[in-house]
Length: 161
Image: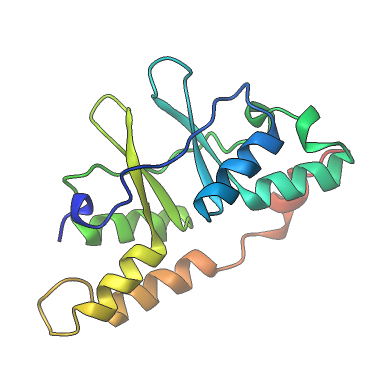
């Protein structure tokens, strides 16, 4: 099964210059916890921001979300897939990157949509026959890898002094 058959095509995005309040409102409108960050003109994906990123930035910096910029807190380490990729490839990328959502991009890095762990889990539920789609075991293995706690030192280094 291809990503293009499972992904959400119409997604909101923000730019590095957007404020965190606007990014949070984009998530609220789409009922999601993730927004791709794109260059203003080209819609090339340059990062991602999550609801957790916004909460942690406002809490640790004790500042209003409208006074903080997305570019200052977004994750620049990108994990992406393409619409033509197989669902198993996306699941592998999520597992290796410990991420629950992937921007779907074209060969030039231009945002096409988003695929989420939920999208893949629902497919596994619908395609219960062996050899068709994703299996429950594959999804659970990826979920365990994605949910694994990261080394505490990494987390502490990310907190501003």
